[in-house]
Image (cartoon, rainbow, N blue to C red; front, side, top):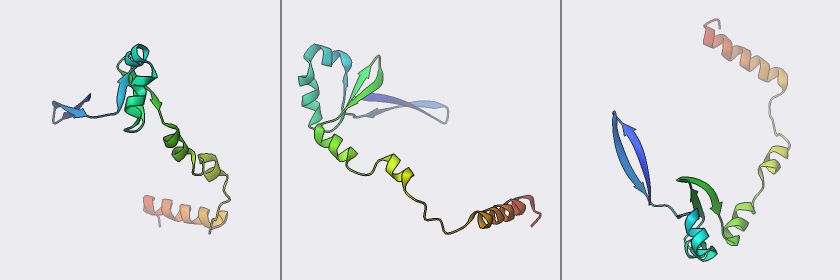
Length: 103
């Protein structure tokens, strides 16, 4: 169980958040059997020095995560822009003029 502190209206409140996590020391002590027990409920966050430092995924979760297009695929796609550069510049100039009250 992970405890989170939140400050609202000057008063601290402690919230308990249930997370699928394990201390690194537990993995050192029990080995991967400790992680296998938790992986059935989803990815496991490894806590070291009271801070999250790793996430362990099952092969199925990893395949699901990497199955779609990567960020590079999205960035490498051709643009389907409907406006050309002069039109964009004119629109921006008009918008900035409206901000300054000169339009």
